[in-house]
Length: 223
Image (cartoon, rainbow, N blue to C red; front, side, top):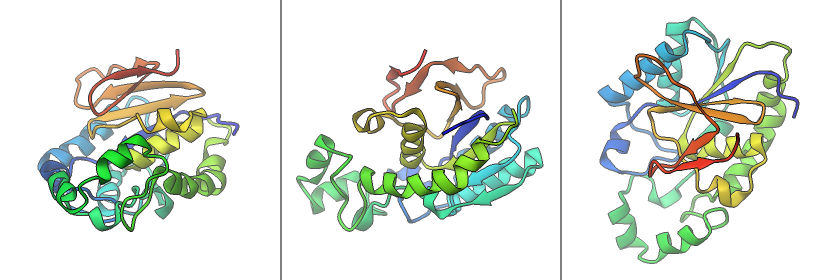
């Protein structure tokens, strides 16, 4: 893909179920007070080089985050349901402890092959990747290929954002399944380079060439 524009990857703000440790997937819960602040911080952080538009997931938590950013920066939003989070199926709404009681061996099995092992009645990474490919082809790709230096923003979800990043950077599945995106981290992709920044800093410091796991481990994938 001929990508001429920088891309911001933004995860929705913290939700009630994030706070309670419950899986959301295709279900939804409202943004917390902190989640609203994170959306506002995302908007403030991007003011120096704002995106000209947002492409957002249609799920409520992403829509609310995108609306806060768009209203603050006075930019339009387009939505695409293919950006919706990986579906956790029968596990949606459950905590990890509840999942382990219902399916005692499942999480250990999935940990060995997240790309191919589906959640009960849900998706695996490969299924979600199959969703994102046509989205890139007919929605995101044409936007990124426009001859303008104005950045584009995607407001979505942790797993789907990382699958999207994997596609844009040609990462292998084992790397993609290691990646994560906390609610307070924004990624910026320009060409084959990735920067990340923590929201809420007075001076937004973009740290080059790194991706961040949920565990805060830093993974170098570009220099």
